[in-house]
Length: 258
Image (tube, rainbow, N blue to C red; front, side):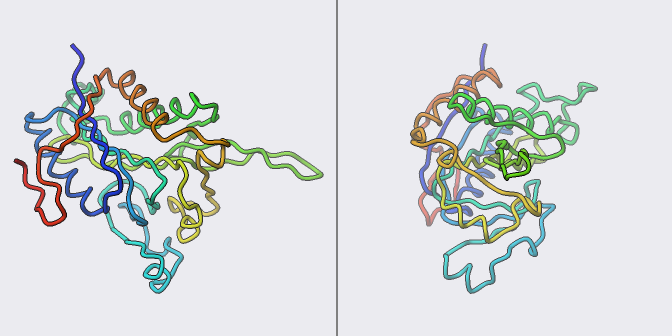
């Protein structure tokens, strides 16, 4: 029998609030009182720096960050620095990896031995498959995380393939074996905000979006439904829309499970 996965679409949510939601929900998923969950949302303008990141990879000074109202958070996911903002589709899968078949090759289901890399690769493939449904030739790249799109550039002497990143991925596994953080897919964000960082800590990395690749771009709802279909097929889940989260999500709450 397929497991149920709750899907909660939240709109524009401050990064810190969403982070607290994830941690509160992950505790309940680990205890088995909630099924796997997928949060889909957007953030106000935010830079997050992962465990391998450096403050030097934020290029704009404090005055510019303040003027542009960009929040900066150091976070416990993998990866380096990335941007979140309106116009992205951000997904936070809160998944118990052992229950979904991500045991280590020796069969161990201890959190330290769970196959997180395989989970990340499946997230990449979900995004690749979703984008390809709309005619975007998305791909993974060996040695690099995230989802990329090949772009051909030409001059009078030669033609060469360039790559632009369209989705970023970074994941953390809790001590109980539940995933936090996830992915950010660029639908139609304000691309100039990428100029304030070295994306993913990769010098020369160029970003793109669905809106840059397709005109007119598909509606967000179309992409979301395609994405959910890929989650169902990849993880053998039944995706069920959940309007309310099981705790108070008001700004003044402490995100207490009800």
